[in-house]
Length: 113
Image (cartoon, rainbow, N blue to C red):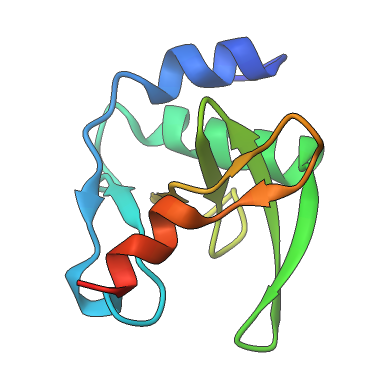
């Protein structure tokens, strides 16, 4: 499966229910989707991660590691491993303002809880 643009990315990712990553609440609040390696959805998750890898908006450094990220529909998405082997997709609530700066206020509000 190949995703050709952000609209297709958004259409596919909107089908998934993300779970809040409780163990990272105070240092890296985010949500994730994880599918079984035998799941019929594995190809979609890998295609989403491949799209991030090939069409990323920015590279961010987090805990001394580089992550390629993409901003789609008021979320920031990233992968934690190679798209050929992953079964996970991560996101948080960062989004781009009209002036191109990153708005982290929603994500940051989770750390205050």
